[in-house]
Image 1: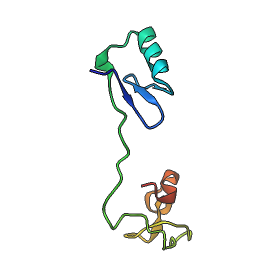
Image 2: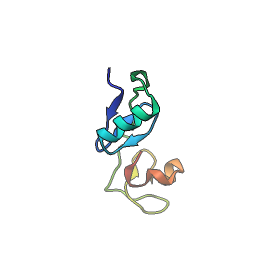
Image 3: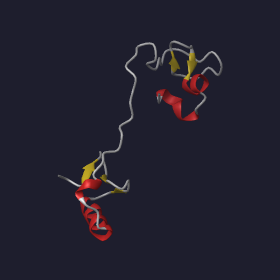
Amino acid sequence: MNNYSKGRDHWHCGCGKNFRSEQGLTDHQRDMNHSSDTAKRKPQKQHTFDPENRPDWSGKCEVCEQSPIVPSTGMCGPCTFGEASTANGNW
């Protein structure tokens, strides 16, 4: 069993640390005495496939006039969810 997982541009150790190269990961695991049972994948962000919640880039938010909007509310992500991190359809 592998004691790592590979992301798009980095390697993940089971302890939660990320490395830019497999060699960096290998050195870390050797130095920290990590075993193969520490292998874990980082959870992937879940995107909704509900058409009512897909970003609508043609609409403007009823509150702040930003795009995209959540079609079911008529507002942008931050106005709908109260989280700045949902800007630009990041929900």
